[in-house]
Length: 197
Image 1 (cartoon, rainbow, N blue to C red):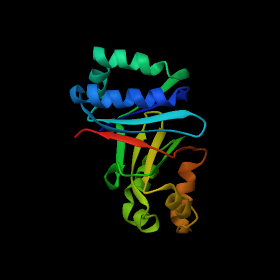
Image 2 (tube, helix red, strand yellow):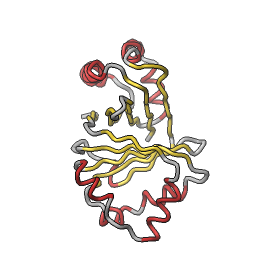
Image 3 (cartoon, rainbow, N blue to C red):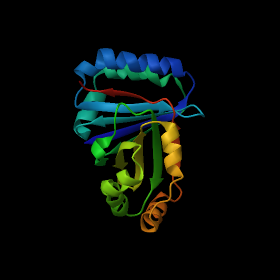
Image 4 (cartoon, helix red, strand yellow):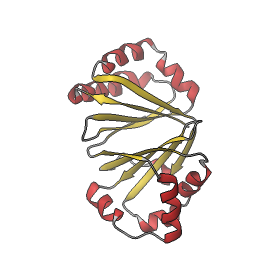
């Protein structure tokens, strides 16, 4: 799997939603290797899109389509300033990767020198699911320089906030704290999802 993260300061959320719906209706059926995506806005108007493809090659071929280029030119006009793209071949799925039924999504970004401990934490799903049953799944996308984007899907925000207050086993908490040090958190209170049917 290949994941592309798209981020930027949005000045027209309504138009982004309209264009997103149009892409799903008109462009998705002919897309190349597109599997789905998770999208939303933060409280400070940051747009975050986490888009899944079957490979980097498919993502590139999809982006080269003329209809995709025209659509993106219109979408890009909804942003203030540059839009950042993060392209990740190193992808780990937790509990199937998430759910389109999630009511709240948290996107976590940071950088690690060694991504192995982070992958190991993501793989310990049994312990995490016991501690945090409101987590429906997650994806972890890592760039070659160690920059990571983790996308965590929750049943709802109230349950997620309650779960944050629950104590973790000390060993797990120490490991998590070490890899998440300095990370940024983006809360998508009203996420939306698209998946290939």
